[in-house]
Length: 191
Image (cartoon, rainbow, N blue to C red):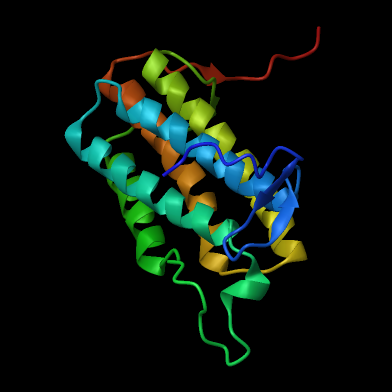
């Protein structure tokens, strides 16, 4: 497979299905941000963390490729007039979302209750989780804007929403595992 094709030299790129769009199109920005998120999750996975979390992160990275594929598909070319799928693009399932929810619940069981917002940080690995969470929220904002223009499977939206929650709880779990200080944000009163 050739890495450079020169087809994007004029500022356009092809979606699955062949349609060309500008590289600044919201669809490209959406799946590009999901790709950025996937890279940040790879960085978390490369840290010294527990094996079960690494396995879940690999699963998440796989699902983010699915999300990217959904977003990179020209909706007009994905479905035939008969309603059947034309392109063999996977989708995010409710089971994928439920897995994140189960992991969130499992991690929360061993954490102290949260009474305040917490400041991101405390350990480099925890900071990587917070960065990934913020990128996930940005991806979600872009994807919801795209959804308003051209709807697709809602499970894609649900997955990104739940994933940001998962990354927040993972950051708290890793703070606990790494014995990092979790600093609560307590608003200061004006003097």
